[in-house]
Length: 604
Image (cartoon, rainbow, N blue to C red):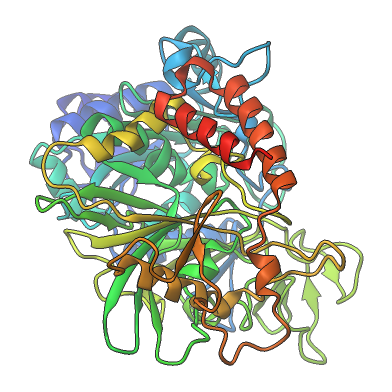
């Protein structure tokens, strides 16, 4: 690290290309004082050889991708327009929950204290002292020989009152290319920061300084033995080390948009949730917006981009993963998708399950750990077999034949693609004020009954603070000051199975529009029992209320809505055990009261 660079950084507002030796990329603009202070600290700690402030121009992105290709980290896919394939080190393929922590002064600020010596399932806490030791063991000198990229980015439309800003420093050009898809990044954000806007400080390193002490696998730098993804909600900081995988390194995603944002939302009186947002319009042209929370592998992206089986109904996508929601001055809950792209799981995505996603990813997309076809395309499990004569290469870069016992694509392989390319993107998906939410749907994957708290709010890996306080924050929305039009709450389980045959009771995919139609009508009902029957667990559709006209197959609607008391008695016992053990004294009294009432209703 040159003294000249450090001197320039200390001056805070006059960083030039010449001082850092990055001549092949765009010139480095001046940095606002608060940003320069953050960057100077990162430079002093990580000691990069060069630095580049990202402007977000197409020319800059093209340069970064060209350099990635030169280094062997990505390969251009000739079959598509501006699409790229990356193969990671096999030890760096997914989020690492065991190495993802929240750092606060007191443990109870992060997680409820489990009873009986049990391990918390609601997050991982690290003390400030242990975090400091871990930081000192990892970050000093970690970017030696590499370029530090400074990424100013916005979560949400830059001019939205719901948007929040961040600055990420990273030594991964793959991260820069991906953040350019997933966030609004570059000069427009710097201009906001120059006006004094607050920002989350995000520091990321692959943990492989140059010269290398050991060879890379797949030309993919990472340090899997030292991975640590740390969140400091009190100071709005994220520090991630050792992984180049998207969920660990694209710090605007789950790290900022859920873990840190959920804490900001608590402090400011709004909600940051793991939810899709869709708009649904009936044949008469009336439109409603729905937010929905589903854990991983429960069809969230497929629902967000649904092709409805019901004639005359249309669905449009606002977002497939994260929703930030805030009540407006009239008391209506409004939501934005803070992301700018889709970071979707590839296997299982096909023309049958999600034709709109397939259209979206046909250009300007970065694929990671999928299979490759000999004609310059991609392939994964769930797609039709390749055409005769087309050969396949698996995600390890080895020859693969259809029918081999190993997988061609990694189960967590991804596509990173611009949301604006989705053929059914909602016209208001970038609305500064957000879209009005009429209903919130919760769901999960379970062969019988429903899932209530086993993955609470689909947020179990993403809470930024104590889950008991999180529940209390949700409940506080009802008593907030001013007008409040609360959305209706629904629960679904697309995955209920016939106990005798093991087959799914419901066909899913586009047929889920039939359930959304009932939800749509319930949002406009004038009486509580309209099209619904009260049950031990809430209001369920009346017989005939779900439109089954044109629905193929023999669908047993009675079995779908059967509520066997033995199951629910077992469920309430499990809930009681779970909440007592995992939440304990932090469980809000209202939730305890609801659980007692449920126990009474399901009792013989």
